[in-house]
Image (tube, rainbow, N blue to C red; front, side):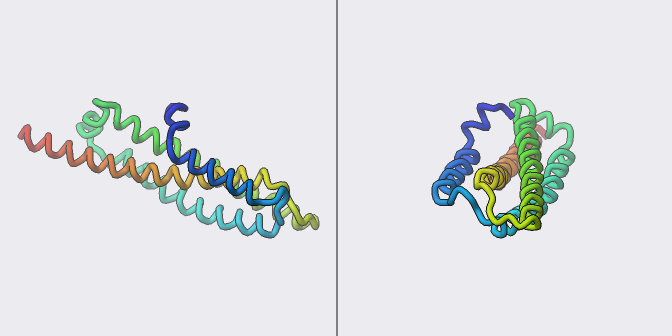
Length: 161
């Protein structure tokens, strides 16, 4: 996926806007107890989405027959769809690792009797979480496009026979 496509996509801008609003509304330091709970929730959500998404990517890669893949690749659609899914899968993984790290950091800090944490690492984690969730939504739209291409392919195949 090209950097230009990433920068003009709605998902990154929505995540950035929400994160900026969160920064404007949140204090400079956040209670560790809240950070720990939010990180645990994010980890749970991202774990489920990551595993389902990984399975969906595997299905998309293996489901098309060679003729259908060649049909999609004539216009570069197959590479674009798989590229979007690959990028989103990596983004989900990075977001999941960040959420796990934030949970561990909050747990250790609470154990050492700290009460607050700087808001910036939490906001970075929130940005990654939001971006990955929105990117999954964007990929779902790509999956619908994939199914429309399948219908087009079947119609063309039927007309030739």
